[in-house]
Image (cartoon, rainbow, N blue to C red):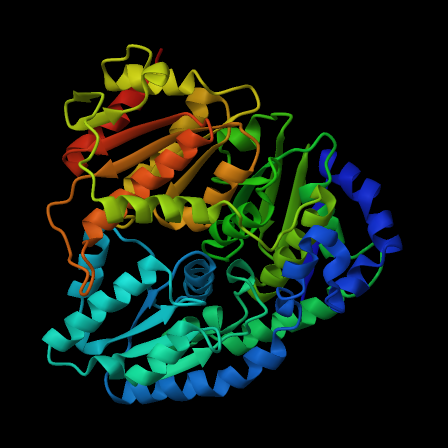
Length: 538
C-alpha cells in the first residue's frame, strides 16, 4: 500500500484552506483522472489534450517491463553492464533519481562540455551500452552524443548498432532513423506525455531498468498514488500540495526544496525541472530553489519564500512557520508532484504543458553555430578569469570582486540569483558550494544549474517568469576538445554557443548577466571562491 504524507503550516496552510474547497467543487480531481484538457482554460486546451497520458502510465509502460528485463539479461550475457544515458531535461533527471535512489550505476551524460563527453567515452567502451533518449531526436545535445559514441564504438572494433538503444516517440524522425540503422532496440514512449512529466514512461523506465532498478515497484507505487489522487475530497494530498505551491496570497514564488534524509537521491533536482519549466511563463510562475538543510533560504523567513521539506516516510517531521513537509516513496512522490504541478498551473492561470521560452536559447545557439563569429573580447581580465558584461552593469568595475559586487547590486528585494556553470559537473563539483555562499552574502534565494542542462529546466522560468533575476554565468577553457562526427562544429564550440546564446536571450529580455570564463579551470574556480570570500567580508 502506498503511503504519502503532507502537512502544511503558515502561508501554505492558508493557501490549502483557501483553494482546496473550490478545487473540490470544480471536481478537479475527477476531471484530471478523466484527462480533461479544459482545466487550464481555452488557450491551453489544444496542448493539454495531447499531454495528459502521465495520469495513467500503465497502458504504455506496463508492456515495456518484460522487454526491458529481457534486454538487460541479453546484454549481461554479452558482458555489457555499463549503461550510459544521453538525454536532457526530464529524460535525464528522472532516470538519475531512480537509479541513485535504487543504488545502481547509470552514467548520465547530459552535458556538451568536452571534458564530460571525453570522460564518458574513455571509460570501458567494451562493456558499454548507450541509451539515447529524445522525443523527436532533434535535440542537439543527444544527437551529438550519439554521433560521438557511434564513432567511438566503431573505432574500437565494436558493432555500434548492437550497443545503441533508442527511446523516442512513435513515428518520430529518430524512430524511423533508428530502425533503419538497425540499432539494438527501439522503445516507444507514450507520445501524449511531455518530457518533464515522462518519469514513469519509457524515458524514465528504460535506462533505469537496464541499469538494474526495480521499475515495476516504481510503477506500482505511482499507480496506487494516482488512484488515491482521484478522490474529489478535501483531504486529497495532490490538491493540497498544488494549492500550497501555486495558491499563496501574495504568491510566494520561490519554493525552497530541502531534502531531509528522504532517501530519494536527487529528488529536488527532478522537481526543480518539473516545476520551473511548467509554471515559469507569462511573467509569472514558481522558481524552485534546491537548497541544503539549514541553508540561508530555509532560515531567512523571506516573505516571498515557501520552504518544502522532503522527509523520509517514517519521519515525524512537522512544518514550522511557512513550510510544507512531504514524504513518500519515489514512485508515489513522482506522481504526486506531477499532479500538484498541474493543479498549481490551474491556480496560476497558465498552461503547465508548454515551454514557449526554451526554444529561444536554442535558436540563438544555432545562429551562433551557423555564423561562427569570433568570441567577443572580454571587458577585462583578472588573473585566471575573463569578465564579460555590458558597461551599464559593470559600471567601471576592473576586478572580479568589483564585477560580482556590481551584479549583486542589481538584485532587488524580491529577486533571486541564478548561477549557471557550463562546466564538467563531476570534475568541478566544488562550484556547487558557491550557492550557499552567495545566498549568505545576498540574503536572497540562489539557484545553481549545470549548463546546458538547466536550459531545459529553470531556463524557461528565467525568460518567461517575472523579471526578478540576476545571472552569473561561468564557463571555462578546456585542455581538450571532442569532435562531433558529421557536424561542422565540435563539443567545445557547441557549449560555447549555448552559453553565449542563452546570455544573449537573457540580455534581450533585459536581465542582468555577468559572464565569467575560467581561463584555467582549477585556478579560475579558486580565484572565484576567494573573490566571494572577500565579498562576504565587506
